[in-house]
Image (tube, rainbow, N blue to C red):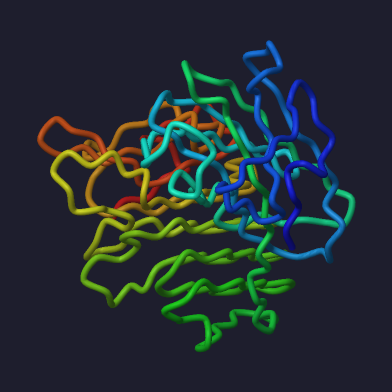
Length: 303
């Protein structure tokens, strides 16, 4: 489901047309000529409830680095117009697409907003926002259940519902929701030589004492394999980690291999779990809305 930017509720933005912009509806929005340095475009999601990937069509020009924040159902993601493509205006060769949300749960009536600030000669132009449904598999339910169909090379959406469930996402960026019960959430293909590489998995435990598996006896999950990698291309997003309910995070190695720090601003609010190697740190997981985690507490297990 695509919403054209010019059809949203605009603040400080204006609609413009260029003959060779190749905008999806022949129009885009821009801060050019408004006398403003920032603006926003808001809308209401009118699709069916479900899990969606969110993409933004915009113009990444070579005369500045505008910045944007995309908020969908209360979840904000940031990005910069830093590709410096082959035009200094809204021409077709400056068109770009960015995935801001790998998997977000939406209900009909949820609001979304694009906010941006121009930089130098780049006027933070947008073409559209698109919501792409992620196909849902049959829910995994019952007590101590393992669903063999959870392993895939594509993005999976798995729901545990009631009971104590084992959810395995496999390869690809997955969305796992354990529901009620004491669940085990594994977003990666554990038999892979590099489990979690190039994946951004969303893990929701739900009610109960849940295990968030971010490593095992053999591997660090979500390691990009780069000596100086930041880890922003692969990590687990733990949406509802609750130590008071008995939730646990399982990691490979020992406690001194990791550090807790603020999550990167472009990922979300909360704490980041970083793997330390040769003095460099790499993001492994983001624990949303948690700012006082202690690696030496009962909330963590090391193998």
